[in-house]
Amino acid sequence: MSIRKICATIVLAWAISPAANLQTQDILFFSTHKFPTQVVGDSKNAFILTEGGVLMYDYRRSSWMDNLFTGNAIQAIRYSQARSKLYLLLQGGRTMEYNPVFRRFTDAALADYQAAGDGASGADLTGLTLDGDNFFLGDAIRDKYMRRAPIVMGKVFDYDNLWVLTAGLGPFYGSARRKQASSFWFGLDYPATAVIYPEGNNIWYGSCRSDYPASDVSTGIASQSNGALVRSKADLNGWKTYPAQLEYGFGDGCVRDVTVWRDYIWLATNKGVVRHDPRTGLFRNYNHLMGSTDVRVNALHVHENQLFVGTERGVGYLEDPDKEEIKTVGGELPIQGGVQVYELISKDKDLWAATRLGLIVFQKGAWKTLNDVSGKDVPEASLVSVPSMAYHDSSMYWVYENRVMVKPRKQAQKVLLERDHPFRLRFDGDMLYIAFTTGVTAYDTRKGLWTDFRLEDGIPGTRVLSMALSGGKLWMGTDAGIERINLRPYLP
Image 1 (cartoon, rainbow, N blue to C red):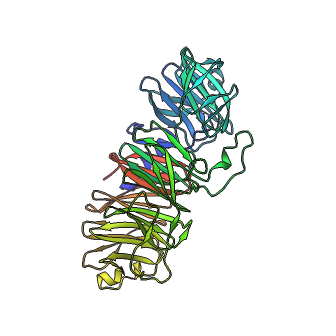
Image 2: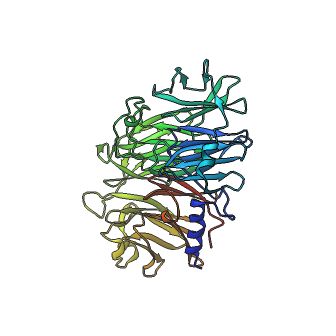
Image 3: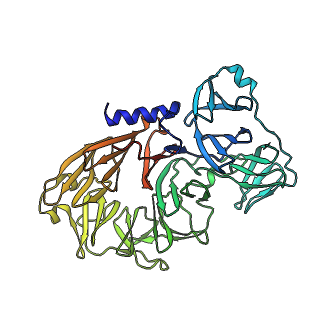
């Protein structure tokens, strides 16, 4: 059996029913969980039905453990304390049961679902006190932006574990005895994730909305943002969401790239660069660049202790984070009139740009094409779209059409792999990761072997949008949410 087939078998098995050799820490999917509708459970676990799947919270470990049965239309859930099993009623009438010990779904009888309850009692929310910037209204909760989220359910488990579910601000969790609850957000503000950026103990996510749905008159939440910046801890606790158009200085929420420079978080948006100070929560917009305003920025890159920006018109840079002047990188571009820049990378002191019209490099104060610096004709990197590139050892890698090209130093270029519309290349040691329309390929450049993680293997979504690597884990953003995969069990 090939590596590709082995990987597909394992991941698909998890999506339907977890395989014996696949643990929860290997694969975890999370999406939006702003609209929970039910909570059931016992003294050990709570299960919450949301639009992004069923969340499982472990009281003893004080952490989220699973996001169950994602990508499926679930009508309702129930829990049997006598059998310690979760029951799902799917759209169409099919019923499933979940065993928290073996973490496996199997078909169940409708009678078993009907005999189960929720394992909780109704909550008296009178006098409820909320944490931070949220406050209780009696039938709803408001946040610091004054967005109203109606309360859909309040339940108490094991005499004290209080859950309050809201339509728009997610679940709140606390103590029924003390009449206190805190926001227990888990997930994204919007599922289609355009960028994922690991930074120390944090993971930053950026979304980009293009649908602008009609506002829900009961909450007013849906139409107030065209994207968001979201942060979580690497262990997926401590979630924080910053919706665009609500924070001053963060007007455009189409976040296309994220990086860290000079202790700030920097965002590439459709209308310039945005600086976020994680210490104060404040934002600042830098929208004057390339001789204009509101220029689309595709990429951010720190090079020679300066912040470089790849835009729809070329490359700029920022020397001082406290000054709003983004200067254009000197020298005349090889392509007249500017060019769309998709990505920037460093190779020693050289700054390379992957653009709509090929690969160019800023070297010794001037822009040059790959043909210029190599002394050879490289048609796969000249006047053609190159969305991404990478360097490893002395070899250059880049994307050309449906191919990943490699050019060792002083050698001719050749095709390394072919995939369906690859758009991002990243190295982790000797492993080259290639994000393409329907998955991610991990290619071992030493052994010449690869492993595919494809949407057809059971990962929710219809299109891959982003990719990141951190701590031995692959983060894959799709239009339905984010998959976190522990890589070690699957690599050759």
